[in-house]
Image 1 (tube, rainbow, N blue to C red):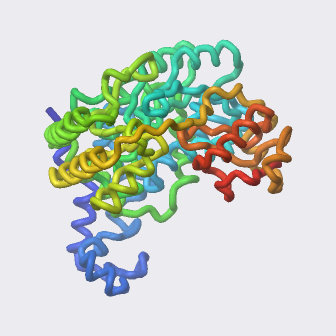
Image 2 (cartoon, rainbow, N blue to C red):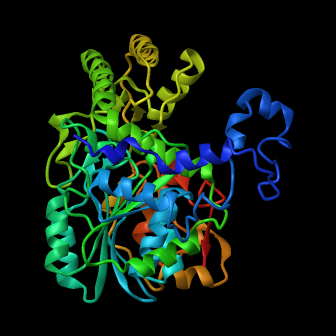
Length: 485
């Protein structure tokens, strides 16, 4: 049961009021309600959306000093998600994570972060000057993807390191895996530091009992959600929620002013307001329908010979307590297909686009808007692929998580501020990396800025290059050269 106020959408209602006011518009944006939008764009999009693309005129409030409609809309979001305070984000979840790191960490402060964190976390390390203390989530080998946070590792980091200011966790992962977050929150409470959670893929978790628990209910102090991923808002719109005594609200608000646009999109913010209202009024119903479709797909996938589907049977340990049933994480490795090949075949032969693929598996998302026809086309494509291939091919998976812990000489910020040069990989032994080098799978960086290229890392990267596995973070994905400071 939701409060009556959740039926309102104050920012959306303020935009509609302005739209029908008939005022002279002598302000930005310069297209003036669509008057100067290129005609081909207008033909496809219509005029209505552009009439709502406004700026901070009276009655529409100001994202950076909200007192009216935006303030009310943010208050409703906080109420729905159970936060003490919520913020609208127009620079995506990345902007929220950057702001949290700036709010919690000063130059040289230590923060515990997962090695498989989103690249925005590494940007946050550069901007804040914080020194990372990494932990390595376990790998689910059948799918070669990272689990959620490892509580045992985090506890050990607190024992070994002094002066830790915060802990970062991912919940759930891109692959839909969620760890025992309450244990992580308890560990943070014992050490009087905030738990910051990247919940980019979890804005929907709160709205159905058959989904993993959401991070706020698990005791997180700050949570950033990509509302556009599963909540129904426009791309690039996100929410940041906070609770508890560990975050300085004023410092966080100032950090958000630093990393967000001074001309925030009212279209993005209005979409957040309406998506929140839709979830408040129909969230359980909509998620129930999505889960029904996901179950239909999952049951059929599990019956196919040579197809592995991530389910409850694969969960093991604190880092893998739950999985998001709206995520179909599956593998055709036993039939000789890499995830890349499956994705390519689905696209080219069957007109099916999935969320993500790596060398090991594929992730398809069953969202609020997924149709039964989408599901049928996905299943038709996979069934056809399983009939077309029966040859088993052994594959090598580069085990980044088996490497020794990195030898760090500089913080990411210190490395970023120094000039860098490109050198051949073979000549890099003993050098300090100027870049993040992540091999897929599993997407865990083998190197981060400021870390030494040791003998183990060099041999590992040479093997990765020899096998031809994708490598992110360098201009030369072939790993012939590397950046050193």
